Length: 193
Image 1: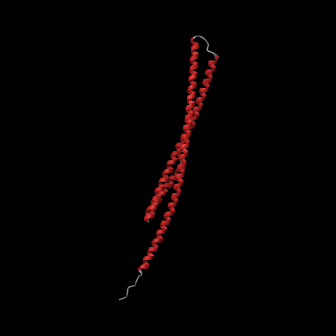
Image 2: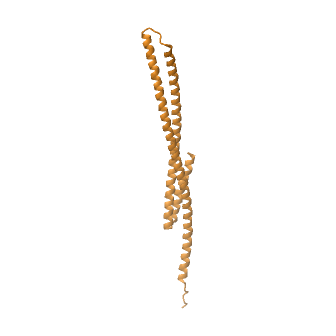
Image 3: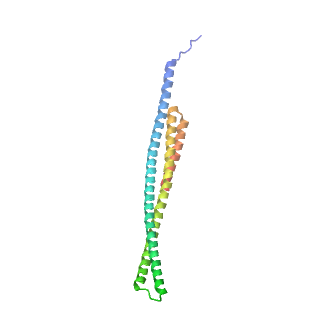
């Protein structure tokens, strides 16, 4: 009977292990590279989210200041209106005694009415500016939400990449890539807002 060929199983096992290690090493390098890219995009999205919310808060603060100034102008408007009403009441007293009111009363009434109109114009201009800043802040907050969602998606993709590296499962890595692509799409969409 012919003698069976001896196969050196130790060398075969080493060759198989080397091949598996080489493939695992390539997989891990790919996972590491994509995860690093995801982390970079997440950092940029996080910075954009922070910048947009900070700018929105500054605009809201400015809008509140403008509202205070507009309220002051409306109070000025009302005060001048009260002064006009007082002058009109004084004129009525003079008229009740069938006497002509002094010319100074008419001049005061005209001056108060002009001041009142000026106060109204300033208050309305301040309110328009307040509304413009509020709308701009609201748009920035809307944009901030997109950046925040992109950060969340990218962070989950990074975590899934870590799971893929630990388990050496390509499916987890592909899932990580898909999530990151969605996150990058949301990130890009934030710039279009």
